[in-house]
Image 1 (cartoon, rainbow, N blue to C red):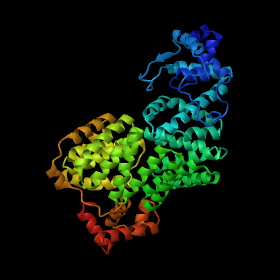
Image 2 (image 1 turned 60 degrees about the vertical axis):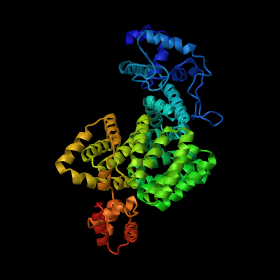
Image 3 (image 1 turned 30 degrees about the vertical axis):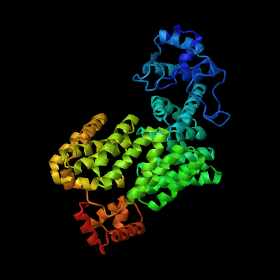
Image 4 (image 1 turned 120 degrees about the vertical axis):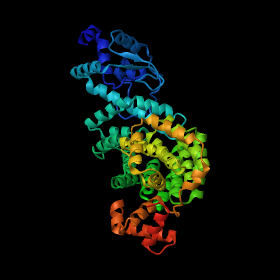
Length: 542
């Protein structure tokens, strides 16, 4: 490598050193802006990721800088086999434009040469600025845009560079830019299943302190809070989301307030606090609508629908879900369409209407696979496992359960109360059909399936004819209008737990547990805990 490097002109040596900063390669535009002559003339902004007008810099096309000078250098490096040109849709390029990549051993040599040259700090600064601008440009397209899949593919391709940029900004103690870059990526991290990683970046960036602007800090805190809530770290989530809301309100940042309230609504839903979830969700929806943020508003709208669904108000939930689907179709947002289909499938399942549930599950699963969105794939597979189990296909359902558990474990995503509410009655049906050994064997076989194999199996079984007699025989009994949290409390009541023990098991206060027990007794029209427990056993819920 050194021999090839020594053969280069001083200009090409400099370009080679600068290109070594890229992890996983780069586009022509990125090479020009970070390592080309234009970069040396100061084209890349010195501070921040946005242009003078406050909009994200457009980094998707070479509009201002002629590509010819950089092409000469790149051609020379290709000729010397120091870089390679990767075409669209290759193993290292999921976007639609050519990339230039280095073998890792060659890149290591280039990094050493870059550090020895004294140019590393400036090159890494330009690299971080470029990918910060890219993330800022991508972020709004990830909500309610037909370009969502395109930008998800771009961010996936540039994931290594985004990591490198974040690491350098944090290492240099740049609170503002590290929090700004992280704050543009929570949607990407969530959809692509990088929740553990995303939370780690947020924690590291926010640990640098509160020197960042209120808008940047509030957005980063909200992103952290949402990711923490999906890991069921509710205490941490509540703390940072409250901080995010306070900062945004004090600074008068309407978008920040709306985003923080969405996070708080989501957290409240996960904790079973439907009143707070509705309050925050409605406030978030109203604010985003006023700002013209239709994609984000639709997500808040979906949140309110889920509150109604998990609270047992199925008619209201259906109204919200149908409106969410209409919005998604109008915006051509494939991810939102997939979410809407999954919502409607789960709603139909709650009504034991499998003629509607199976087609919606199938479409939702196919769309979520296209979106490469593993969390929602897991949710679809869970719903299908329950539906398949109810119609008497116990072994296939158990296989899917094994695949779902393996997928959730790999993602670091625990099961939520509403997942348990969907699965508990179906599990009773499955266990009634399979003994412990057969169940264990089937779930182990499912756990060994790949991501795509699990999806293909689920689709094949779901498309098989529905046996109406089997469905009638195994129909899931009604849950008495109980919410997912109340079902969880009921199962603990049936196990003989006291209110204090229930509170400890669910990480809620004793007062909240007592309130849940009172609601359960009222909804079931019974007078004692023993009567409620007996009802749960009769319904197969405990």
